[in-house]
Image 1 (spheres, rainbow, N blue to C red):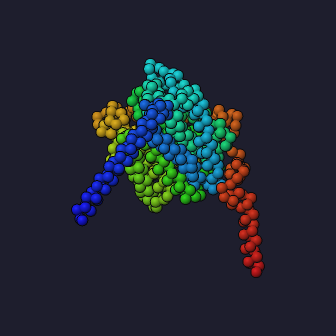
Image 2 (cartoon, one colour):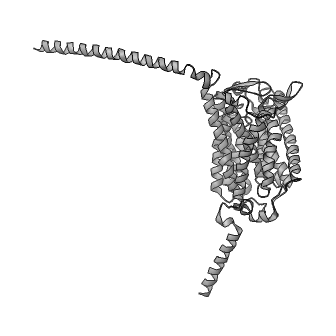
Image 3 (cartoon, one colour):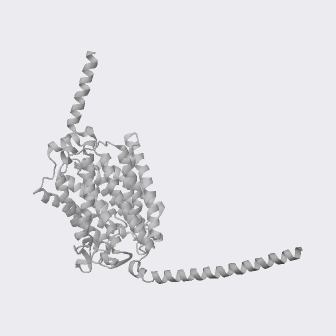
Length: 493
């Protein structure tokens, strides 16, 4: 009986297995046919939207990095500047940032991108001087590969991605510059100044260093904008502050009205810098990862160094000081981020937390130029410090991933310091001269300063709105009258 049972079960198992095998074979056939259909369906798709030259990972990272950098401006710098200024100027400071971001995109598409990254318009003995100020539409919607600069440098991302990535760098430069003229510049003059400055100052300097123009051909390097963005912004702020003139005598003291706004903005700026420096290689590469790590290491060291400087000279660390130190660290590591090792990043952080501090509190007061938020020291000086130290610390063990020919003074190439200094000097002189001249020219048609009565009232007079109800002077007066009336009633009662 048991044998019969075993035989029946065995036969049933064999039958079940054969059935399953048949079903499996059928499923495999269906799966194979589905895969074949998908392959046939997608055979033409990559050639249109995913061509052979396109690296999808790099493209995704570059779009993400560009968004990070954009968020540094709006709302990052807008919040940071609004928090640092007096509350009656909170709207005006944010509006100057917001307008600059939008205006630069328009001029970038019209002429700025190709002026900074397009085919050479002017060359002297093979050195690229200027790009072609033409609209950035050629090949944009045809899915063309990015090819830029006098050397026709190719990247494995679409032209549209690169145009957007470089735009957010172009935008943040006048955004930062605004900090030098807050609390007194005529908004109408600012509206004219921003697109012209972006075209006449930012794009040429970007061509000289980012796109492989003459400074880069001479050997000057700027990994992600220490010179192109921060020296441009800092020196531009200095020249603009001189051209526009100082604030009202009663308002020259820094009065940060909202430290929470300042901290929120600083946080967006810090973390957004991962895209700032991490996106510069143009893709998902080893040097991008190195740049991100170096960026954060230098920033942390710089913030702590600035706090220690505050404690030594002022007796207490402050949030304004800590965030200022973080920003100078971000700025100083920018030209070096993909060229140095972690130890050198720390040393750059120490330098950026101390030298710009000295410039802000010791040098700027002697210049007697009213740089509202100290942009010259925190960006201009910090950018120069980082650029020079790049010439000292460039490590061949790191530069091999991006530029194997680049070697710093510590590795035998002392001349690199001189080349970096030359780059800083050229950018400084060109930027200052053009910025000052441009503003003086604009001033012939539009007053550079807001009217004194508008400056006394602030946002409401300039924009017809206020960030806080009590910043409207008329409302403040009424509130004070009510307080006085209540006090009198209490005394009488």
